[in-house]
Length: 123
Image 1 (tube, one colour):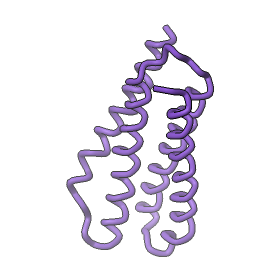
Image 2: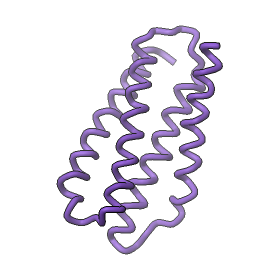
Image 3: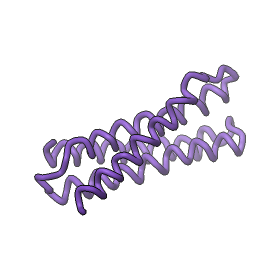
């Protein structure tokens, strides 16, 4: 995995996090319940946290970094945060996409795995 790819992925997820956060704070504030809005914000926060991690990893120019770390964070963001967005938005429309429920913890496991692999890398 090239540094440029890692940085571009982190930048894309960071940009989307800002867009989704603003969308949630303004447009969705009138539609979502406080609990739904809080869940949406959790997705935005975790997406941004991991976007920043990808940026740091990309700028560190570590050639020995395992591609598995990149993929765990990338897949984790998509499964975790985006399933939360889907769950919240579908619930707000009265047609909750229940199949997304089990995807969120799978995404969380990918995020945890990315952190674990990063820990192993530095040890």
